Image 1 (tube, rainbow, N blue to C red):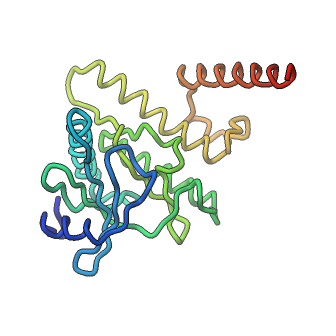
Image 2 (tube, one colour; image 1 turned 120 degrees about the horizontal axis):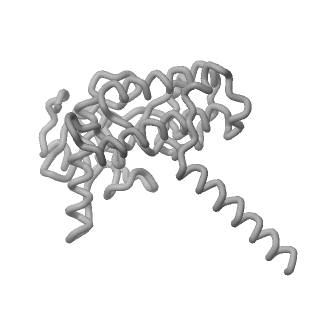
Length: 224
């Protein structure tokens, strides 16, 4: 899917001159770079042994997902997978949802829901949208979904484990969208939005653990 016709030489040259970004993604390192005056983002598998093999496998899988999602508005363009370890993506001038201020929340979250529905139609469930770093906000306050490292592609035919994981992540995507839109206040959901919500067992268990931990912390502080 090398639509910009970059070469491996272009990518390696961009890495030498690019800037490393910290705290982004799961696999290896992430750099910005320039190829022919065009700014790009390169995710690279690093390390040795099993970790290096796993990073390369995950990047190859993420490349396959970007190919599947090609053309969807709100998903960065993918320029190719090079030398078995470098994934080249479109660079977008944006900030993470954790850092950004959304000027028109209703429009933003409506568009975010449409992007989620579009990737689901292509058989992909993101699975990690509760992490605000995986949602970018562009300068004109539009959403962009990134980092498909743990996403699930639904396989055709009889694959019960895959289908269970996909369905779980599918619902997790909508729950994450609602969590961000209503800032965890699910009681404030509109009837239209409420039809997208279904509480998952792992979310319920997580909430119980957090409540128990907070109670324990308060007791310890009280004794101190």
